Length: 243
Image (cartoon, rainbow, N blue to C red; front, side):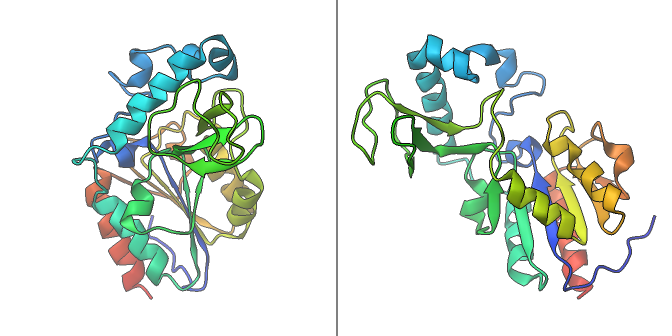
């Protein structure tokens, strides 16, 4: 179907998933050959796993952190296009990402929510503070705030934990004129349910930009398929050209 005219004053919510980061060279977790095919998520991505073997969990995220800071891992054209959309769309853009990398920030996005946490941050189980951390973490690493050792964990949402800032995301979904889902499989809730929440209101246009149709593809008003680094810049150009 043809895209309706989106008022420039209408807010936009963009959801991004692993597909956009994969094109920058990062491992995804769920695809064939991805991280979960090589390690048990119960061991490294659950609170119980951390209690059983914190050293194993810390080393797993140390590896992920080192990989993120390798020189060849850089934002791709899709990241840069979304940063441009945020800068130039009059109605405002909230970028909600399931990714724990910092590629959106490096591309220039500032109005964003990391609903599954951030790899380059740690959280103290004793004082509750969250801080930036780019180095390796051990079971004895002191908290950068309270300075007590042994209570630092990755600031990453594990299985069985509630994603972050859901109230803020819900309010933005309720208010948006356009919802765009990019590079997501449609497997992981609550993010997979965002399009349904938007459609129930019946007031926003919904678009899927993905390599292949997601599990929820039939719920979108519009879909375009191909590499994110190719189709997202074109979509943004068209959207901004309509202003």
